[in-house]
Each structure stands twice: as structure tokens, then as C-alpha cells.
Length: 310
Image (tube, rainbow, N blue to C red; front, top):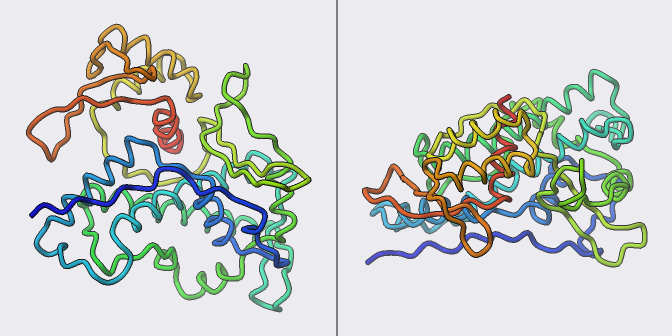
């Protein structure tokens, strides 16, 4: 009997005032979790990849006895969301360093001590390792390089030794500063000339000081170690990027759309009812090819990954 994989939760959960932390300080892990849960959507293409992977996994004779621990779909969703949440936080802190919240650590005295330059560099390096860990685990499970089991977890602690874990557990910001940092920026809307496309945002209802938004340009400058496997769209996307010398989603989308309508493989030359680009998908685990669509949002997520490798 074939087991149907559970559907991946594509939409981020709404964030309301009562969900906001009300304590003086917030840890780095809590900030990442907040963004992951309320600010990261899983694009249709990636969601289907996860669902296909989980369906094959659950129909395996060993994995059909998956009983304890997190459900496999929840593990994959969490890794994906934490990967992009940490990437977005890293980008925001780098891009707006002049007004970013002050890094603090309370592991020594119990007080949230402001970190010096050396401490801030260590904090950003730890954030980069969180990005890399979640990205690598997600890609390794999806590609089969590592086996997802009932004991697999999403804890980042495995990426650090005991000393770093102790420091990480007391690493964070003053909560008020973090919320003000995100409130200070209005979310960017697609279609404004010269502005990057916003791939997702955290919106908070009924907060007088404005909306909390996490905005991401098509370029995310971070030292992520990429292990993403190449697929049928990579060559043509690389061609579009090279033709416009840009990683901005609207710019690359226009170039890619022209290639697609001209019949550049693997595109079919057609569009679906939403204007997405239709292409022939050649999955390695299947004998047959199937039609799929590339949305503008999915392209934006692919460009983030490429920018990290550039």
C-alpha cells in the first residue's frame, strides 16, 4: 500500500502582537525561529520536491515504521525555513550595519554585555555556521547524501562544540532593539523602480510603530557553503544572469522569460495561466519527464542561493 506524504506547509504563519517576545533580551536562536515561522514561505517547486522525497521515504519498508521523533516532513520544513531565516537575518545585519541591533552575550556575568569588535565577528561567524548547517542538512537529506531517520533533528547545536554552544545559548540582542530594527523599514513592493523584490515578510497586526518586515534583495552576501545539486534549469538561469550581469529577480526574470518564450531548453515556450514559465522536468529518480512551472518567486529563491556562491 502506497503511503501519501503529508502536504508541506507553504505559507508562513501570521505574526500577531501576542506572539512577540516580551522579555528584555532575545537569543539569536529565538530571532531565527521567529523569522522562520512567520517570515519564510516555501515556494511551490521546493515544496513539491520535499513532498516527493518524503513520499518515497515513507514507502520504504524501514521508514514506514517512522514513529518517534519529528515527522520527516516537519524536519525538512524546519531546516529549509531556518536556513533562509538565518540567511535573511545575516543579510539585514550586513546591509544595515549602521543601525543594526547591538550584539550582546550574557554567558559570563548574566548581564547582556555589549560585544566588542572581536565578539561581533564571532557572532556573525556563528550565524554563518547556522546558515551552512541547515542548508547542508536540507540538501544532504534531499539528495540522499545523508539518510533522514526517525532520530534526525533540526537542532543547530550539533554544528558547535561545547564551548561555542554555551556562548551561543547566551548570544542575542535586546528585544526592543530587534523589533525596532525590523519596524524601521517599510516592506519593499515589487514594481518600484530600482528597488529589490521582497520575497517574504513578517507582518504584525495592531502595532502602533508599524509593520515588522524582513526584506531580501536578490543578493544575499553571506559565506554559505553551497552543496546544492544542479538540475535542468541551472544552465539557462546562469545564461540569463550572465546576459544582464545581475542577480536582481525582476531583471533576471525578464531575461529568462525572453529565453523561455524563444524555446530555450528545457522551457517549452509556453506560459501557464499565472504567467509562470513552463518547462520539462527531468527528475533523476524517475524514468519519465514531466511538465513543471517556474514562478518568479521560485526564481528569486534560486538567485539567493547563487548569490551566496558568487
